[in-house]
Length: 154
Image (cartoon, rainbow, N blue to C red; front, side, top):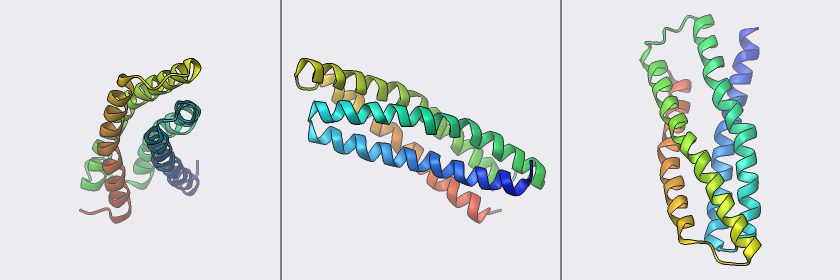
């Protein structure tokens, strides 16, 4: 595959990955703060779907396309910027795995509460806190990766 095409897809994929993460986090946090279980149930359903469609696919495509580009362009994986990009990507991916589980729990709790016309259970806030806490290192990792990809410091 042509390097330009793979570069384009790599950048596009990173845009989907980052944009989905920031967008879904925003909507789930705002909906959760409103405490309307029907709204949270609806939003959390879409957050889970978006994560599976966009994040799951791009979290697989990003390292594959990145390794392909590094190989084709002759960048050794031991280059400082590339090495740290890989480390940070692994950190972000490891944060994402429990986030998916937490999002599904948040969705299930909200859907159940909405069906019973009850308030959210206390567990919801604990799951939401863990979900948000895991989002911070992932967000920081991606911001640093973007810098490393652009600046390529020695």
